[in-house]
Length: 295
Image 1 (spheres, rainbow, N blue to C red):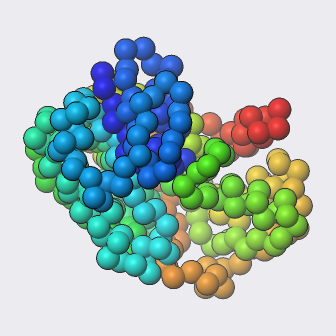
Image 2: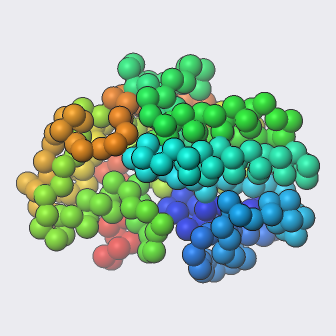
């Protein structure tokens, strides 16, 4: 089986590639904007916005493409809607077209931000209603995929965390470690509820999807509903950082370009039943990351 991962310089793409290394009879090809070296994979740099996607498919002949490449900062998407649309929607459109032409299974990374956050406990059957342009772009991409004839899997996830070297962008955990280790205060929203996702769990679920050619829409996240502020507090304590530097605030006190949905907690029963998905509890996953970092 031949797997193509786009955006493998991000936290999720990099972990998917690493997880596949242990899978026999799988060849992994990984694209990134900057030089990427993941042992056991064929990695190459490419600006996908300018790339000939059909030529890439013709050269690699993937059985599955895992499309992680995106602008995933809600604020960046809100500020520059043009480039967000090019990356999150138009690039996805071109990859969908290639998947149709070459009969490739597409796995697409989506987000809990397709929901408005008014009720929480969202299932795959709930109607999306994004409150920011990032969510809108991801929802538009989902619709393109679902309207196509290609086999596809849409994976919606929430507040993914983990630590890797040379990541394309930070996540909640790396920001927290960076700020608190420098004795800087760090504002965290106390009124935003999520189901934080350990990146290793997400990667394992996606590998399972690929190996078993599972199709459909899946919520793949942690199981614990928690505020971003409480997650940050738990992480600071486990990492032995000064949690008094954390400043819990309401979302309105943060200077962010994009509005955030309040409660986008996801129900993961479908993933647990179909994928045998067993998310790691937050405390245990943070301990694992700490051990990996510091021994």
